[in-house]
Every structure is written in structure tokens, then in C-alpha cells.
Amino acid sequence: MAGLSALEGAALVIGGVSMLVMGLLGSPDSPQQAEMGGLTVIALGLIPLFAARGLLRRRSWSRGPALITQIIALPVAWTLLRSQGALIPAGIVLAAVALTALYQLARPATIEALGIRRPGATPDTDSADA
Image 1 (cartoon, one colour):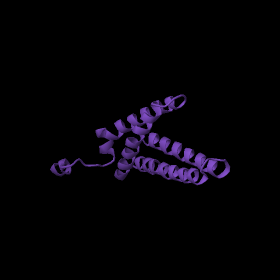
Image 2: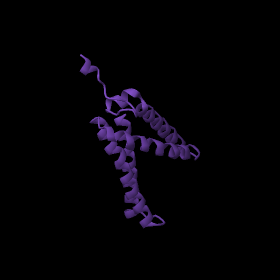
Image 3: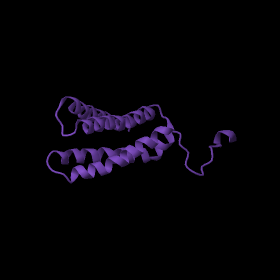
Image 4: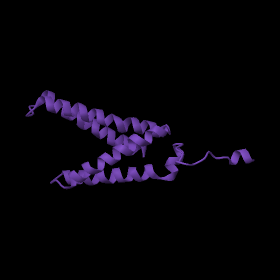
């Protein structure tokens, strides 16, 4: 699951760098818009990268940013699926990655591994009984 988050983050950073470079070196209609778009996409790519690092270290805070990234990815995938040409396979891949990551993040084993307690749950007292 950390790998999926890292993959999405890396893809966003690469896309953002590409937009930034095209804004600086290319001839877009609006260089400022291309540059700001590139910087924004790079910043958005850092979120799943930090979440992936936290997931690898089993930090409970990392689940929130990872979930948000996947939820945001679903409408993007839908938009790609409704387009034409090469964007359709990209939408399929993005949807598959986002749904797989959402499933993995929602699994009880993941929640337990990250040390997240469910609302209303009491700390385990089995060790005190022994």
C-alpha cells in the first residue's frame, strides 16, 4: 500500500516537473499558468510521497493523507475514462490503483498495523489479566 502511494506521488511529481519545464522552456499559451500548474502538481505529489513514508514506518497519521489522495484520484480517473485516446488506459490504471489502495487502507489488518484504535474501543487488557 505504501508502494501504491509512492507510485502516485512520483507520477504527480514527474508530471508537475514536466509542466514546469514546458512552462519555462516551451511556448505555452500562458507561461505563468503552466509554471504555477507545475508547481501545484509537484506540491500535490509530495502529499502521497510523505504518506508512503509514514505508511512504511507504520505511523498512524499517514493513513489520512493516503486516503484523501485515493479519494481525489477517483474523479480524476473518471474524467480520464470519459476522454478519448490514450487517456482512457491511464484512467483505467489510475482507477485500479486508487481502488486497490482504498481497499488496502480500509482493511482491519492495516488499521491494526498502524496502531489506530476504532472509536469507542478500549485498550486491550488481556495482558493485565495474565
